[in-house]
Image 1 (cartoon, rainbow, N blue to C red):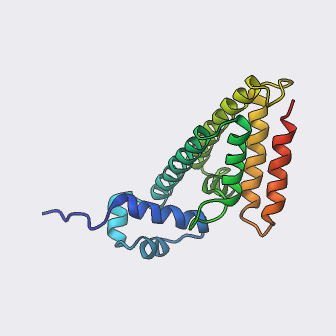
Image 2: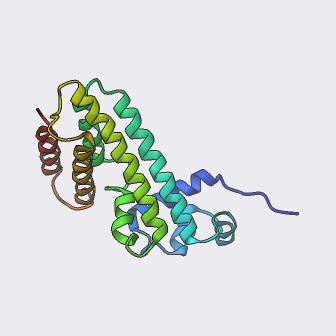
Length: 192
């Protein structure tokens, strides 16, 4: 008779995600995962197959979480400028009780050059983020908030580059005031 799971898969996946987010893939050992997730090694393998598969699922979990938060914040914004301000603020300040920076950006820097699965996942996530930014820039161009000298796609790529840099810098000891100045200038550059 098969044993039933003694844990909620989403709960332990969330714990694994935060550990990978904090430490990165290479530094996180199977022992770290077992201890942090509070499950037996055998259960980890039975449920997630191996460390790499667990990591990819953790990346998916992170991306879903961030997409939901960004989409919700943008929908609540009254203007395109407010939507961008929300995104930049979210990227700079992060979430309460969460590691700094962005798991996807961290994973890209650590692994994408040699792990095609990680590269594919991060490129898909980056594409979705840029599409959201295209929608915001288009909204801002239609409302007269942003310049029409450049196509919305070009401006979205520019903004995404700034966001990626800020997410890397958010993992350092750089002052948040500096990051906020960079975000503010990035938005002001879009003005007509």
